[in-house]
Length: 301
Length: 265
Image (cartoon, rainbow over all chains, first blue to last red; front, side, top):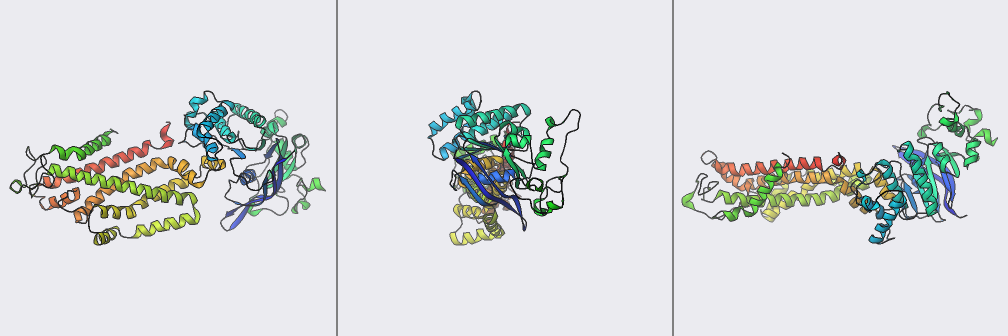
């Protein structure tokens, strides 16, 4: 299988006043053709910063290598499609649905106006929107949240990308829509034979879709592995605690589990393991930076 | 009630176009034996000290005022939107430089520019237009910039960048259409200011010159005769007030109804 995306030693840093904040600290991962990779972690762990760097959307400083099909320069949009978190704000309120879908195709000169229009209608039909012909001439405020998310998916698919990045695609939707949209993303992935990079803070979403999982904490990948491995035998204490937080993983009448505290301030990172302040197994050894694929001394030693 | 300013403005436009045609006099016809006649059947709005028909002159003045107002506002809008949206979108050093240029231009006393230009070019309509647009676009640029600064944070701008759209495309296809409400409202509110400025400059003698009629010139003429022939002051003053009021009301209405966030309520 060929590699679609290879990320090597990626750093993403923002300038905050005079200081530099490292939102992503030295992560490497790869996505194979047709594979679905999930990134999971709390808010502020650098998930979004990492994928925005991959899609070349970030204004932060990016260092490291991002290879797309072995090449460094990718026009965003053409080869990488992106689905955003909030369907209510991700569509331009002053443009008709139709012209928003055809925009990429026409802009990249991949189709003529009429061809693009035909394709857009086909896409709308494919993502399960009824009466695509009418919808083409409607504005975003005519549609419901779930429908808008479908339109966003259609936009992301319009140029037939090789890689689809979905940044928390279901977070802003309600539970029933959530399942439908996830299924739709999966269907589309099969239909267009794309790779999928899915970001979520919700292990449920990840486990419904992904082949492989990357767990991120404080800008680093702390654990990685196939979905079954990570879910059934999580190695890193953070992964274990995240899984414990799921409602279905508790015994009856037990209160919901939480992880105490909050992720560390990335400007004042403690020395050594970033998770040690919240970790039940923290030891003296944790004041040194853990090495290895699973960033925990308990696993490496 | 909301259509009131539009009706009045349409009325004004119609009369500016056709008013002079329905009166038997031309704006510069002098009938010295019929000077300072009060409003009546012969002269609908009265006549001035040279026996010129005020009704005809008012509508000639309306032509000049509306022309100056709309032209100046259009030029201001074009320059201001261009300048402001580029400054707002690129931000950082570009923004800093462009907005400081605005500040510097804004700091030059306006009347000084006009007088200087009058000295160089001689007074006239074009001089007024140049003087007004030289610094008039700054307000529009600032409003447009602040709008763009706000709008570019939106997710759909990120989405447009994710499609791969260039900055120029994002500015003109995505940002400016969304900022159109405030832009049109500001433009409509620039028109009365421009009309007033023209009247004011003509009043000072820096603008349109006799025998051409402008509301400002007529005001100046009428001022000296205010005590004895009040209609010579009243009609131009009333027209200026009415026009400015209507454009201001229209601007406010537009600002409220063009806001895309209010559209689906």
